[in-house]
Image 1: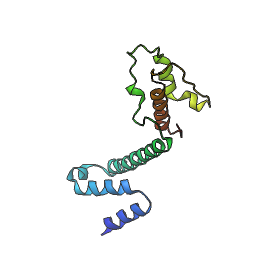
Image 2: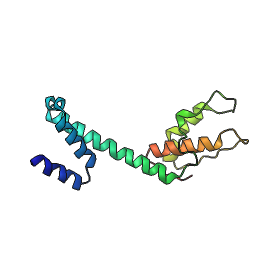
Image 3: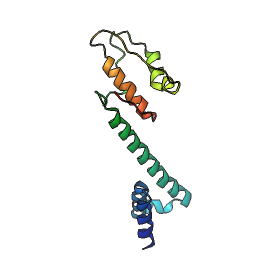
Image 4: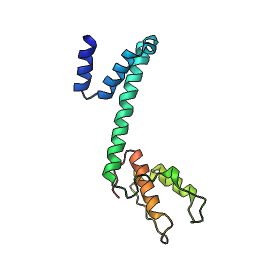
Length: 133
């Protein structure tokens, strides 16, 4: 009964992922071997991860990227398009965002400007920045 009230309070405090993790811990006998601090750490990690994932999903949805699946790690540098790999890696790091600078992508049709722009937007969202395509 005490656990049910605790779960209800966690959900009312909007800690649903933590409540779900606590229920999972209670049903798994392996968790009984862990110390209180270890179990609490697992609960907090689960809530932290869920919140971070929801924030990223919200930022990506708000960004309205034309190519929402475009990601920095999907860029093909082998094609002869004149891409400067170190420069792009630096841009994906987001320093230009923190400095309040802008990026302008230029080039002929079909070289991947839209894909790179969407990948930059994706990277910005991963770092917690709001962006709009």
